[in-house]
Amino acid sequence: MKRRLTILGSTGSIGLQALDVVRAHPDRFEVVGLSAGRSADVLREQAAEFSPDFVALENGDATVLNDLPCEVISGPGSAERLSEVPAEVVLNGIVGFAGLAATVGALGAGNRVALANKESLIAGGEWVMSLAKDNPLIPVDSEHSAIFQCLADRTDEEVRGILLTASGGPFFSTDKARLMEVGPEDALAHPTWKMGPKITIDSATMMNKGLEVIEAHHLFGADYDDVHVVVHRQSVVHGGVMFVDGSVVLHAALPDMRLPISYGVLYPDRVDVGAAPVPFDGASWTFEEPRSDVFRCLPLAVEAGKAGGAYPVALNAANEVAVEAFLDGRIQFLSIADAIEEVLATVPDFGKMQSMEAITAVDAWARDEARLKIERGVNA
Ligand SMILES: NC(=O)C1=CN([C@@H]2O[C@H](COP(=O)(O)OP(=O)(O)OC[C@H]3O[C@@H](n4cnc5c(N)ncnc54)[C@H](OP(=O)(O)O)[C@@H]3O)[C@@H](O)[C@H]2O)C=CC1
Ligand SMILES: CC(=O)[C@@H](O)[C@H](O)COP(=O)(O)O
Ligand SMILES: [Mn+2]
Image (cartoon, rainbow, N blue to C red):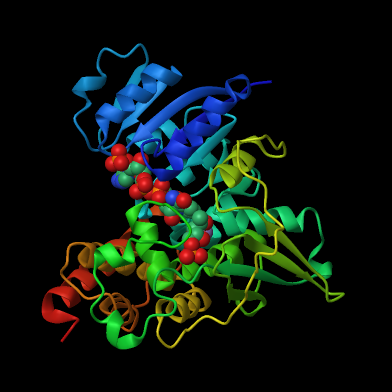
């Protein structure tokens, strides 16, 4: 049976790997829709190969799509409109807060969501989970896919905690003096994963792990103190579940996003995506404590998650602005955490985050605040 699949962000790292999965298993998929941000030419080529019913282009020049034999949606809100088109599964591979509207759109339309866009859960939190009550939300983030697989249908009473592994990024062993000098090129050199620029910088600051703690809290209903981050430099063990009897079930695979993507879109089936098996040839697996004194984004995120309400929304927005500023060479690497900390220190009472309007208002406020603080010199 073919699964009717929409891929949002088909021109990005997650999207391209999802299309590799479809290419490897054409008998398993019918492509309903593909969406891009600006890359109209790439989207056009993808449409020619995968014959979707719809393409959606959020920001680019859509005229090159005009002669495609499918419906073209273009302009702001395109991905959200595509997310609402009936599909058996919508893979959300959009980067950043921009993905929230599409997660909400897909869930509202009754479509199953395979979620790579973790920012949806950071900003949308309980509200998104409440929308997902009747529709499954399948995690695609590698650690959460791992944990989801380890949990299977275990009950809350059996589970003591969640184990979230972190690669430690390119700077795990770098001293603080050197971290004041590292630039975008250094930070984009992730040791184990090849990903888009935003998440790669998040991995280098360890904000990615902080966002993933919040993501695990929402997806699995885990208390923050029961989500344990451990640095595992090899990125082979992706996560685990700690049980009340003292045992831990771990998930291992070589670092290859085609695995969690294929599992997420074909759940509960598993297929061969051509990944190499985990070698048991004497290679060591190591586990270490995170350096939260240097990588302050991790504790900042956990604090924001615990505070709840507007705090995780503001954390996410400030982080997006600060990462962009770092990539543009406007702030130093360590100033990413400074900018976020300064924004979090001034969050007013925004009330409950139970609608797109409420969340968008906090997001816009925090972006303005972060830009102001960066302009005034967060490095000073
Ligand atoms: N890459 C990975 O291995 C992993 C990624 N994730 C998460 O998955 C998400 C995607 O990451 P990744 O694939 O690395 O990111 P990329 O930057 O590689 O790709 C982002 C995709 O989103 C599209 N896009 C960007 N802005 C908008 C917008 N405003 N509206 C609609 N579409 C937009 C881009 O389109 P275009 O390029 O055409 O402008 C592109 O297709 C992130 O949330 C990330 O944290 C999670 C785990 C692993
Ligand atoms: C592949 C994936 O899921 C990323 O989120 C990955 O976890 C990033 O690596 P870090 O562990 O360095 O954040
Ligand atoms: Mn991850």
